[in-house]
Image (cartoon, rainbow, N blue to C red; front, side, top):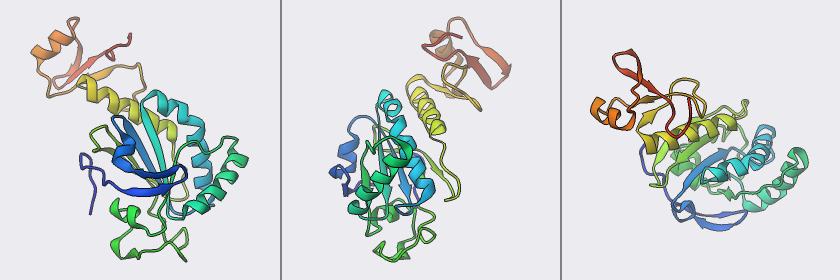
Length: 222
């Protein structure tokens, strides 16, 4: 099953380093980031998990939970978490799903259906495509996806920026331009009429092209 933006994120029940969870129930009425790893004790993923642990307060501020998943058993995760804390200096402070049967990574189209039903004997290269990030909204729908090669560590500052943009656009009827950072100007969505835009932005907007209307970020100066 190919997953696209606005598809419902597949639900699952799984063991994690913090106990068994039902994914949709665990998300609750907030946001979630699900990010996957091809194998425990891999170097790039070790740096990523430590980085996310250090950034967890930033995700918390955005009402966003973080869930990691690796295609190994929870017992392996618990041993791996000690290495993560030793190397990165921050203990694992979010749940890490065990998926030794490959069921979840197959549900999320990160491995093909014919990949089998066990992580036993599989190398990181066998699972190389299990390197995805899914940003999921309170409605349990996928809002964004990113997939990285094993050799490139993921930029979680960019994932926070993406989350900021998606949360803003969900509530304010705007879009964010290239390289936007929180507090910078935004674009009124084409679906918003000039009449409705005038009601919200009585000071007007810049219009460098007929189809681009630029305004300060709602709720922020400048």
